[in-house]
Length: 637
Image (cartoon, rainbow, N blue to C red; front, top):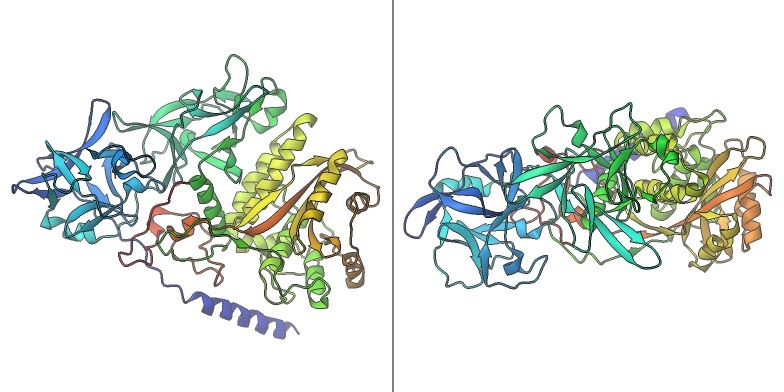
């Protein structure tokens, strides 16, 4: 039997590997940066030179010399310059292009700003040695030696690339950074107003969006000063011995130095466009909505949070749609959950959505599926599992059940699995860590925060709700996650009615927090809930000793009332319900980033399960499947 199982495993792996081989990938070219040399209509050989004057940045056609900044034409169609350790990209004025703004001018000067993946004004095409904006209808010219674009083709002072630049123009160079422009905002809500405030320096400002720049490769969150080309990074000043400290903004470079840790930030437990932000020591970024220092950001140890309750502190911040999509993309790549790879490079309708209830092949009354769910539920041991952070065996089993129900066209064999191979009396986290080391690291980071965080009871309900959404979103980054808030015992009916009002075939995840009457400690459990034609069905998790007949009997129980749900999740009243949350996995999420970015070696586990299991790196970005082999930039939403 062991030999037979090994043969099946090898055959299964071979089929997955064979399916993955249909993906042809070409990594972006090694950069060969050059001073950008052009030839003017009157025969002059001049070079692009970034200059800063009168509070703005420009491109000046200067005499060529080795002192000028070198340029790169990258795989995303951007023209970047290294200026004093920062990578600044050529930007077409939105006042002319109408991209990310209204077209109000017939002509305007070119500028520079930090290179980002979500600014389409930074994308250019080169045709017949001439540089055009992304649409190919606006050509870069010069007026008094300053580069500009104009809607009038009759405007003079043309120039084109010098013949020496031919190989440079044909290179699809690796990008210098993988950065996003994004606000970092927080909502202020009271009975008089609802407003968004944006971080800017050491304060919060209303109304006008303040764009910051997040560099995903080094963790910098920076403000850009266009009058000098300098970046000033959000800086953590908190020492290990301190409970909290104010942040500051210090000059920084895209080119990282050894002492750069204090500028490094990570986004923690993101859900849609809201996220916590932590520094390199795991301290959380926070601010107060009231008081003398309202809106001034600071960092705080998670364990010190119960003592920081005055003036309505906030630690969840709103970020751009594009950055939210990027965080989804990173987790999906770590989990081999990308729909396609390599990227096609073509932007399609991002509003396209694919509804995803249970797969048509899934039948809860089918004995094969019942046995498969039973195999997952008993994949654990009676000994305490290692877990990952606060992620216990029940969560990992729930995620595997949900993913197989939503995706598998046939029932898997015992010993296989979407996230881990099922095996009775074996800790599933051991195999999960080996299979998805990058995703495990992300979950462990979330877990360390949750384990060290301390909340007053009044804050606990909201904090647990955010945590649940963040955990599910990390596992199911390719799905739309919706649901209730974390509910207390008196609000249970709200969650039950949400499930019962959903269509048959809907898949839900129920987070349950109870108080053990013997220890008075808060305990958590998680189970999938399937909305059938007749009501709600709970799928048992983390029960190594349950027999198949016992498991089938539990699956046959359909629930239609709040009292029945209360009995089910409190073990017939032997536990005291504290909180519960119902999260629906409603549909596949169309992430436009998969059309623009992919990491080399992303064959993954076959169609619709692409990924490299690594965080994106600039030297591993693929070329795209377009005639030019370049990739489109993301559209703002």
